[in-house]
Length: 441
Image (cartoon, rainbow, N blue to C red):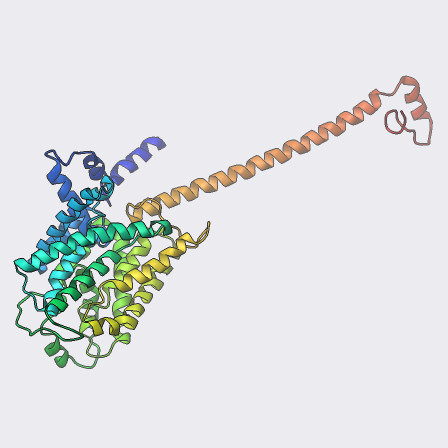
């Protein structure tokens, strides 16, 4: 009965969270077969979700829909990045499992989304054929940077996260600005209608109109917009769709995401000066959102992981506040540098000792399953420990019984070895007698 129940639990778990049943089915299908299109869609959609640890094709489809709602150009850039990621994943002979899960493509997807959403207003480029060609080139570069950086970091047993995206995106932005003759903090003339949803071309006018007092309703709106800002679509409808995609993959992960977003957004109110436009747009929340989610995804969901999520969220927003003036001087967005710094530092703790305070999850699926497996392992460990104690008690009891039996045998032998004459002499005398074999030869 218990075995059947465990099989049923294992069966439905394959269709929730990361939906491993789909991965298992498509993994061995050939790319030169009618299954090539389903394999590609599965890989691209999972890559979209993996930007925020949500390895689920349906979640990825919902996030892609959010991009089309917020900014269709971002969605098309995302699809282009996904295709190039798959092609160069095969060219560079990456494991089929990594390609299937979109792990070789998600950094490129970030490059595509953010470059289209943000860069035109900072470089003066139109999103034309030339821009798409440049983007494709940097998407190829992103594939190499991603694989190389992960190879460098693999001995440390921690992932590269979105560091390849940050490197590639910064290189692309600075190259475009240099090609346009823009240096320092100089911005192009605001003549480009770029549908930029992350950095509004009317930001300056809006900032002048903002009141000095904090508008807490807008702060709470910023906690929602942070989810959309991860993908460069900072509108409320797109952000709600993104949160629903997270919720479909893992309710526990979604709770940690929103907790991090609240911490980062509220902390941003106290770490930046009025007007608080960037806070209201969710730009102070998304790095903390990702950091909090990383703690519950890569680590076993325990109270220690919860504490690490809170500390990491605070650390991410502090890193953003401390480094923002450096990025402003180069006219480069902060991107996800704070998330990477905070997350990598905390995740490294899980590799420090044999029994670290933060427990690394060896096989990544989804947080609820990680917790389920952890609880089962703990229960089995308790039973094993109790069994070992019971065995030790049994061994101790057996040894005591053996000693008692040996003592009784010795006493019996002491009597048996006496002859009838010695026994009569022992009973008739009042002085102690030395028994044969215990003082005499």
